Image 1 (cartoon, rainbow, N blue to C red):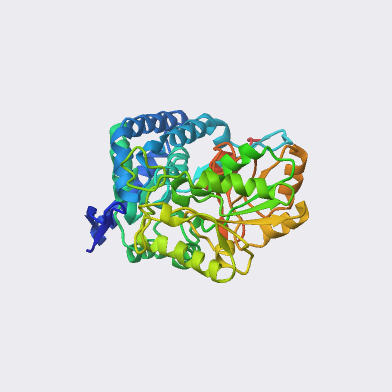
Image 2 (image 1 turned 135 degrees about the vertical axis):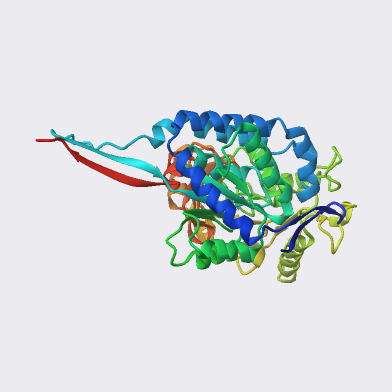
Length: 462
């Protein structure tokens, strides 16, 4: 066994150290999960939903402890209050739609003498490999719908937020989860690979990098394990000439820099119509300069450290490359006292004179930097938005609903936003295209991902 260690980005101290599970513990967890799942699948959807709501209540009751604990692990400022508003919204919505989403599908053409239907059967054992950036929200997207659909769940959480898995486990036990139905395992990458390669699980959900997603696919190759993958992103925004400028500026600054830019659907590149470009840029830069970079435990801090120095170094490297190629930086990082080279403390940066030859406009940054380009038309904006290997979300700021939908139809993305960004609506499928991934979570479609169809063709006795 080896240890998984969480080092705080605040000051470099050790927050938690946990030994990885032994082979015997892993096998025992898998065996208990299979047994629990068989019994759980026989319970009613109503009972499963009631359990999910008890779990949610147990988790919400820990919020005051969790907020500073999360800041210690990954650096998000405590002033923002954690993730449980969205957490609650998603759990409540998925319980509300469960009965209708999971009911049998009946053919449109009834036939006398036959009973025909398609039942949604649980996938079986669902393996969730969760990330650190929104460790509660990303995990709950699959965990709760999986349980409601009749599955058992094994969670492997990221090392940077290793305590989150334990919080899930505490809440599950408080809600009265049957033994083995939910298990939090501390696993190494090699153990995760072996579990997938063995064919021990029926469905895996992974949120992380493109390379991580490819590793998941390679590990599961030949097992026919189904999967949901939410991988990299380089989410664009387009600001049209008919925009309400103040709203767009406020929205997009927040969309680019909230959580130090470490958001799956954060805004990483902005295309602005030339008619409003100068005013937009002035307002965007002025608002960005108002961030307070510092210790996330301080209520005055609005921008915490990135989760790890190596993540900050990626952003620094992209920024330096862009500047070397002619980009212009609009924020004086020296104005941010906490900004330090070789540390996770990184000031926000706004770049112009950028183009798609620069990695900051093409590769995921996942940090507090954004490039802004001037465009002349919708067509140019669409071409640039689509010039990317990724496609999770795209935002369009405009007063014209029809234009937003028309443009959205042409953008290669999983979600189209109008006049908002960086939000996940549980009523809509959360999905991506191209290198951003495959599958979907939440909405009725999320339940389809966690079940398999089973057809019944029953003929009455003649």
